[in-house]
Image (spheres, helix red, strand yellow):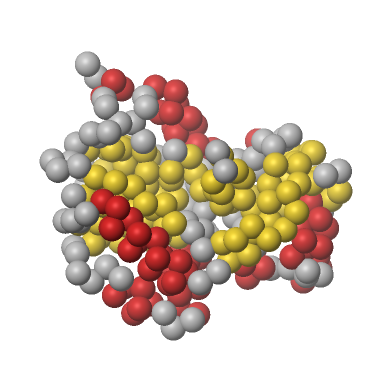
Length: 255
């Protein structure tokens, strides 16, 4: 059969997109409808310039508004680790009005989204900035597990522009960021005890997590977590675990 019919226990998909754009989300939606194979990955960045200069490479050429997908069959098997340093801390609110096409949440529980979010994190709405958004991503729940979404900016002092798509009528919970280094240390150690020997790791790490580690002078300690196994690591403007998420580390651990 085709790659669509592959066994998800033996095959893993990897996607690299040039940005968390509507195009990339449509690709992931279509892939999810076509196959049970799990796709992970991330979106390229531009050194925090946010000027639209992201590209992806394929066979020596750079592409914009594009995504590269590959399908792998690791010889000795693999496992996936998704880890995030955020705790559910705020109210669980319904998105009561949204501009889904432009990824803007206008209302949470019937209130201006920016005002509801500011109150939940204990900050004045007028002075909220990217540091607050990194510290308090929103989460949606799937089978009891949180998946994080990042706020990009305020819109007209009322709405919240998101990095990824939103759906009116769904719920979001405010979270508080924790210690990236210690959270990753525990999660990686637990996973390696569960899976046994690991021959290599492919690691997609959110750029906001990299910034948090840098601000705490923890970059060397974080790198040391992977010092005993070959590891290829990439920072990203968003991660992929079935769909687009944020402020997360996604790893493929090869046996």
